[in-house]
Image (tube, helix red, strand yellow):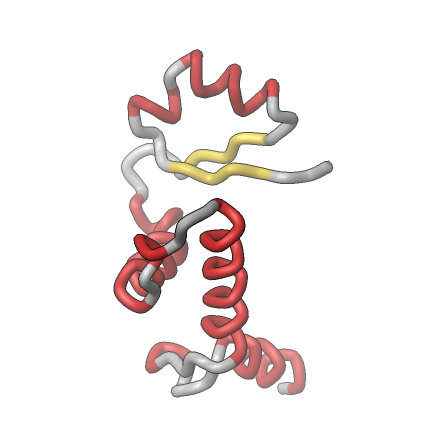
Length: 100
């Protein structure tokens, strides 16, 4: 009920046809602020790693692709350590911050 699509302000995302489709699907649209690439940086980073680490072209169906995405999100959050998070996984780092 509160699904959101986040994008930059590219032509295809601001096009009335796309915005109508988003609205018809019951989604909310959120766009980065104009000229501020940092708003979208975490997602750009995630998808960059996803494309490097997952053979998504091998998926033969939407269901297979969906499974690959869910598996990668789980891996990314719980087993993939990151230099920028003191060599912890995102889940470990979040727990570390909450406990501090």
